[in-house]
Every structure is written in structure tokens, then in C-alpha cells.
Length: 504
Image 1 (cartoon, rainbow, N blue to C red):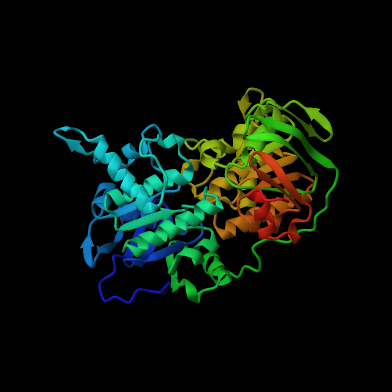
Image 2: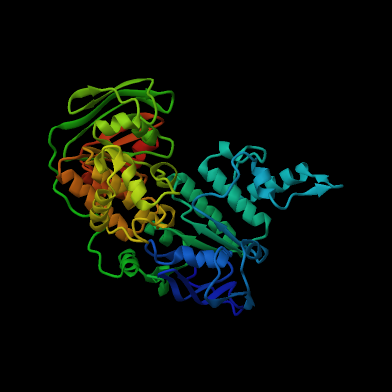
């Protein structure tokens, strides 16, 4: 792939001197961006670096305080999402923007429905949708309700919708966050096909390896400023990480001396339909146990059963050698089990509440005097964790929805740290989080293990499991496929072979 197109034509998209100030926060200061036709540009930076704000200015979700936007060298004015769409700009967000109850065809046509003699022309819409799916190499029935499609298929519907409105610039925000390895590779093929047809793609991802796999150039933002834009062929992985965090980072994974103690949690024959089929494992105090597997392998479903969020058909759970009947999350919390859910926004937080209210929810018994919450104690406890975890963004009373992904994850962490759970389950703890915050979470996991807690990490990132865990349990199709006793000595190829169901 060429480092940079050499055509004399003006860039497809250019943003110059973009600035945006929110109350008390300078989100962007004099930031520029250039995207050529047929190019994939990676946009990188820590949470809060300004990536989302820049894209919202481009998409018409925010109005810029300074700067200008040019399409094909001509200045344009974008004040609404509709104006951005009319100019050929489409944004595919990490939280997909589909109507679940409508079919793929209906979602693609929404707002621009086809008619014939004044009546909806569903047949033509279906033909158009089928052609778009064929172009993208996707096997999707246009009449399938979107709620029944996989995340990868829903993403395909979003891309098809962008093509249907003849978008020339497509922004993909963390598009692989919930995809399996094969689905991510198919996504890359689609991106390459889009750029080969002359579209420009802005690709936002915290997964460094993806940037080198898909992008011709990479642009780095930090603290609302442009740091550098370089061809990916001229920057190393380590250099890119250091540009993002603004300081040398000796290693991605902090070292830790494992000190396994008594058995803390034992699960025997856990079963729920076809999702979890006779799963057994154990984890000791002072140990970090990893769970590997493809999306749908049953990892999250297993953790929900352990936490009491779902009821098992059969199986037993033992805590410190005692049999426990965990029939609800409340019962799990009483047994000292905490769960950081896979989807922190939908399951780990109440987005309409403040950071401190979310922190207090599972800890009301600890923060109350009689029937009333002790607000002084609540603020003191929250402040202690906020300082230790470096939670930033508007203070304890700020709506948690306004925080960056990394800071939202830290709020979830804070409530379980206050609970002093003896067994802490992290389900995809670093999904959508920048490298600097990842390192902080890794350090926290090590501290929890050193304190004698049993830690379980469910992750789709194999380097993360190898770098952080003592042992790794591999799941496939709802079953435990195998176990790796020494995670640090494992290879990605070895784990992948077990993940896809090959003999262990």
C-alpha cells in the first residue's frame, strides 16, 4: 500500500485549524486533518485526546468554534448531521445506530424510502439492499430484523447504508471492538474494497496492530492538539504508543510475581442451555485466570452465571470451599464477587446518573447511616478512589455519560474496589480504552492479585491474556476446550488452535 497518494487533485477532505471549547475544557485547539480519495487514515490518541470531538464536528453533531472544512478543495459549512450526509460524510459509531425491530432493508432505506405510484416500493428497496450486500461480500437477508443479526452483520448494514447515500467519506469508530478475529479480517477486506473504489476511510481504533494492518497513514492527537501525521511504514509500534501517551512506555504489560494461595472460587458442571455446557474451573487467591474464546464461545455467559445475573440449569459454585447458592447479583455481592461487565454502558453503569451515584449503587449499605446515605462519607470514599484511579472529567457530580470510555471503566472499577470484593471478574476490561489507561488497569489487576484476591480476565485480545494471566482457560461452543497452565509460555498460535476448536 502506498504511503500517500500522489495525485495533483485537492484532497477529498481537509479540516484546517479546528477548535472547540466546552465549559471548562479546551477539547480541540488548531487541529487539522487531510484525507485523500482511496485512502484509509488511522486517527489515534488516548481517551480525551479529541478524536471524538473532531469527528463530531465533521458529522455536524457539534459546531466548531474555529476552523474550516473543505471537500474537494471547496469550503463547506456543516451545522447538522443532515448537512454532513448531503455532503457524502457517514459515521459508523461503536454503538451501532440501527432500529433493532426493523429489517436490514428498512434500516438502509430509513428516511429515504423508495416509492412507486405513491406507495412504498419494498421490492426495489430489497433489490438495492441485496446489491449492496453483494458488493460488500456479505450474506445478509434484506428482510432479516436487525435484532436477529450478529454484531458483524449489523455493522455491514451500517456500511451498506453509508453506500446507499453515496457517502464518499466513511468514519469507522472502534469498528472491531466487538468482532471476532475472522470478522475483523472480513472488515479489513471491506475497508480495502471501499478505498479501492475511491472512498476515503477514517479508522479510529485503540488496537495498535489494526492500524498497521489497514491504514496508509496515522494521525495522532493528544490533549486536543495535533501531534503528528506519519505514513504507517515509517513509525514503529513502540514509537506510536509513545506519541499517543506523550512519554516513554517501557512495556505494555507490567511484570508481576505470581503468588498463588488457597483456592478461592471453584465452579463445577455449570450449564445453561447450549450457551454454557458443563463448564468447570477453579481460581486461587493471588492468581489471575484468563478466559479465551471467540465471540459466542460462552465466556460472558459463564461469568453471568457465576455472578447470578442468569440462572443456571445445573452446576455448583464454591467460594473458599463452601457451596454457595448464587441466585442473584445481590447474593453474589454478599459472597464477595464483583463483575465488571462486558458492556459497561448498558450493564455496568446508569448513564443518566452521576459518577458518584454510580459508585454508590452497590455500596449503599457501607455508605449509609440508618436509612439515609451519609453524603460526606460517600464523597470521601469516592474521592479516595477517584484519586487512586486518576478519574478525570467534570468531578463526582458529572453525568457518567459525559466521561470518556476509560474514565467510565474507572468508575465501574471504583465501585467494586469500595466493595472490597474477594473475587473480581473483568469481562473485556480494556475494550475501547487507550494504551495508557490499559496499563493503569493492568497495574490494578496486579495489585488486586497481590492483595490475595482472585482475578478472572475475559479478553478477546490474546496478547493481553498472555501478558497478564497466570493460567488461561480456552472455551469453544459453550465448553472448556482446554487449559494452559503457564500463560507466559503460551503462544497466540497455540491458543488460536484451541479457540477455533482444534485438538488441544
